[in-house]
Structures are given as structure tokens and as C-alpha cells.
Image (cartoon, rainbow, N blue to C red):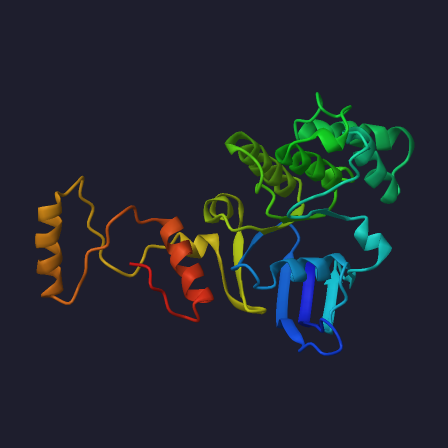
Length: 285
């Protein structure tokens, strides 16, 4: 079964009676199978968050159909099988961390001993046991990110949607979230990850989608990005600036050029992303 199916999704915002309509999304067709970890890449304003909110049932599309596990995304039963961490989570500041996670667990229908067990597990998974009795208003941005992830995971959802999950985290916190995402995939769950961090996407995702100006501008699997470039690659330990200049001149006479730096899957993903958001051209040197 597909976790997410989008058929010709469009979204138009009209700011006010005199404002011009803004087409945030247009003609989005997409299928994400269960068990995938899919990265959603795009520049600011490309429509990523709007797309996520439509999948979550928080926004109604202007056109098209959205299905999550074969049912409308705004169906209550579907919502209980989806966990969501927004980009900049802001929660009730006077609740403690454990009270916050309990609140969202209750919204999802969990009760009794199973609810308390899931709350403890979720808080432990994000490393917030020691701070769970403190009020959320005293948390740092990174701690809010962690407790936000706990509320997203408390129901053991089949689909987890993460919008910039490591935006406020240090290196250790980002690594912890990476392990959590791998654990979700290992148990058969699905993850849709919106991020600006290509390294994170490369390490965690099985497939990548490029969104630009409200349209899907390209896609590819990480296996495809792992394929060698169709160009000759010469590896040298180091070259002085004078040697590089001489080599560049030699190559230029033969219609070629020297590309310096490490060349690998990350480089190919970066070039593909830049080509997608620049309308098919890449200025990457």
C-alpha cells in the first residue's frame, strides 16, 4: 500500500478581497510507498510546508485529491496514524514536557497504562527524561525540538512527517534524530522529511523530491545518485596553485576543465538540486 498518494494537488491563496491570488502548489502528482524515507528539498517559498499541511489534513487543497493509506488525509482515523513535527514548534509553555506528550497522546485516543508506557518510551527515545518534569516554557529551542519529536512519536505512527527536524539541534542532537529515523524505517514505518541539509538527506533518505515554485521539478533515488558521473575522474593527492593553473590550461586546450574538491554522491545530489531549482541549469563550478 502507498502511504501517500497525491493526484493533481493545487493550492491557491487569496490574501484579501483586493489581493492577487497566489498559486502555492500546482499539479502535484506523487506516490510514496510504505517503508520509504523520502526527502523533500526546495528553496524557501517553494511550497514544501504547504504540501506537508495538505498531506496532514491541516489545509484543504484547492484542486486534486490527497490520500494517506488509501483514505482522505483529514480523516480522524488517518490522523491517528500520522506523527508530525513542525519546523518551529511552539507548545503550551505552562505544561511540563510529560504533560505535553500526554496531551497529544490523549488526542490520538491513547488511554490508561498503554498511554503512560508510550509516553515514557517516546520521551526516552528523544533523550528528554531528565527535563520531562520541567515546564516547556523553560526549554531551549533544541529541547522544544526534542519534546516536539516525542509527541510526534508517542503513538508509534505508521507515517512520520518532519519539517526541518534538526533546525535547532547541535551535532549530537541531529545524530540522535538520524538514528530515530533509521529506527522508524527498520520497523516498516514511512518518513517524509523536509530539509535544507543535503548531508542529512543523503544519509537518511531512500528517495529525493525537488520542489520549486509549487511544482515538482525532479526526483531520484539515492541509488541513482550513487552512480558514477559520466565524466572522467582523475584523483591526485594535492596540486600547487601553479600546477593547477598549468593543468587547467592544458585541459582547456582540449575542451575540458578541472573540477576540484571531493566528488561523490553528495556532489551529484547538490548539482541535481541546483539544476532543479534553477530551471534545468546548474552554475555549479
